[in-house]
Length: 183
Length: 80
Image (tube, rainbow over all chains, first blue to last red; front, side, top):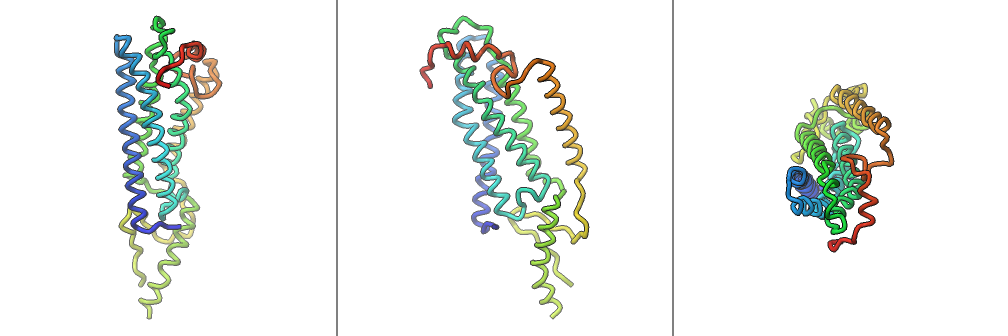
């Protein structure tokens, strides 16, 4: 069912805000992860890993879920559809994979934050820093930039489902006009 | 003469001319599929040859294999 224009604008606004926010948060996470890898100060490194876990739970996860949900609603509520255009499918896949990896990666971040915050492991400097968060967040930024580019360029290509929908839509939209112009 | 279909003002897709046959998969989709397929094969090969496994979690990257056990034995965090 198609949404009315006001609702479409509201959902589109929510989708753009959450998606761009997710990308910005991922970039900020890269900065924290890079600083953790480069820093020589033990306290700084430990505090950065604790901050990364907080940031992932409080910012990245909510934004990723909100971006995914608003994207699905936007697709289903407009003529774009969820499986009619290849670029929409590609963007949906990126969103699903990125969100899934993020959710799975929370356990790793929790372990790193535990190690960083634990006085019992204060002397075990070999465990930290880990390059794993930097690797993951950099990959996230790359795929999110690709998703943003897909939204802007919208490369052509419709699926069979999209082709059938467009034929159906043309038939319903042209019929009254044809009658009016011929009559 | 019919009026051409006008796309809406809300970023709606253009509707191309009526085509009798369903369109094939575009080139960019094929190329992307091949690249992703190769990356998956490489990642699987690295995981198998590197003795990895056990899903996406601690120990998969960055030499974190012993972190979980050490973390579990650690003092509970005040922040949790």
